[in-house]
Length: 335
Image (cartoon, rainbow, N blue to C red; front, side):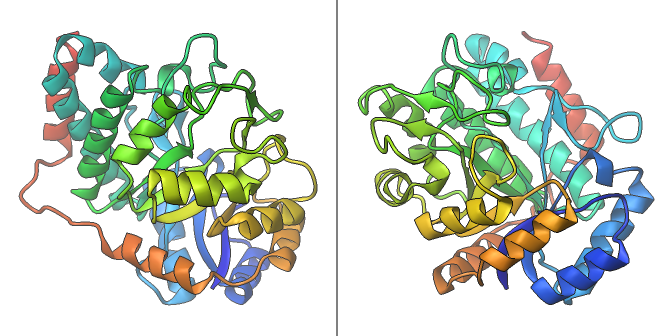
């Protein structure tokens, strides 16, 4: 199994993609707006991806946070609130905010599950900092690490109750970045002591099944390499300090924070200790480059993947979609 997760070019697999994926046998796939037209089409696409490998548990990922980051969009699929809505409610009624976040996460997961998606890149555990780029902004659950942790745990639990696996992001914290890593490399000069608050939500949720590492350079830990390509950050900070032993993937390897080709970037990330590279664009020539530069998932990576995919507990006695949405909206109206 190749240590890569790939995006697709469009709403259906091309013959070229099908042949490539059969040969590469990647860890999984990630979907974007370009892949999501309607319920029937999307379910057919996810079924085809599973059938391709003869495995019902192939990870099929999506970024369905709510707010401005949502790949399945109205009018076909309902919108969900941004993270900031739960932050506002938490200031007034923490327990209500936690319940609202869990109900919202379950509603999202039920929608994803019906479309054949089993992994959501949520919760976002970045602690919002004043003056930082708005790439985090209203997506964050707040500026207090304990609050972010509490809401993040509710999101993980809510999604798991509907059979969807969560990915904590963006390790070891994106909240201080002054520029958008989609376009350039953020350099964070905060001290190791100041970064303690960024790590706290990830430490509290260290048992999460999957995690995503950001493309950010932290001078306090490794002044030469971005976090996704730094063995210091991955081994000493994420694995040891945080204590995270779930499946660790890169953020999109196509982001312009990194130098080199997609394949070169991926090779550096895996050499640094990432389990999987995440290539999102669906550009076929770049996928070939990635495949030529990454090997198979390591035995440790295989074990982490197996634990992640086996660890979801579906609760049959939980509320259905409409009830979850009604409960969420009732609680959010308090703020």
